[in-house]
Amino acid sequence: MTIWFMTTNRGKVEEARQYFASYGIEVNQFEFEATEPQADDLEIVALSKIEQAIPHLPNSSDMLLVEDAGLFVDSLNGFPGVYSSYVLNTLDVHGILKLMDHLKSDDPIQDGNLRKAEFRAVAILYKDGQTIVSEGVCPGRIAHQAVMGDGFGFDPIFIPTDLDEDGNSLPIGEMGAKSTHGTPFGGIPLEEKQKYSHRHRALEGLLSNLDMLG
Ligand code: ITT
Image (cartoon, rainbow, N blue to C red; front, side, top):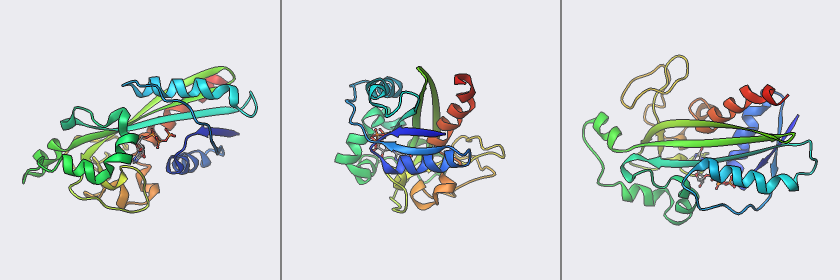
């Protein structure tokens, strides 16, 4: 089984590839320049992209995946949200850190709440004329310093909250069975990021609904 993943982002392809490989599904990057609508909802953006790409699929029986993500910072009223790509290209992660420089506290829980953020992803899979939609969220906070590593995008500055034994995210400040101990995604291996990742959660939702499509 092959899925065409329409994205310009190789980091996203790598994560999807690693996830689907364990199910014997191959992921190929589908290079197609879609026009992104101005909308403040990830699902509207992803739906528009999939509709534009369907006529260009190599075979009409192929599966097509679009997944749109964004970083939503509480104290910035959800900014950069759907504008995450643009903001990363203009301000970069260091610009976000600067914007949040005044948001700090000596109390770790208060600090975490001041810097609260979440990654959200909406994944849409098209197969045989039908679409399934799935969402994934990863709660966390913005670090005080960037940790550059193997990740991409905002990975250097995003610290996920701990997980309980079942892999569910806990509220900020709660110690869980699984933790990055304050290290942002940028400083941990990809296999480790997958346990927390919004993308991983959205793709899991898709897979559990895949039999719906037959
Ligand atoms: P496509 O739209 O072509 O798929 P993109 O890079 O614009 O590629 P998104 O719209 O999904 O991807 O993501 C918006 C921004 O958020 C973009 O700058 C990404 O690098 C960043 N981003 C998305 N997922 C991320 C993740 O898991 N870790 C870090 N940054 C992420």
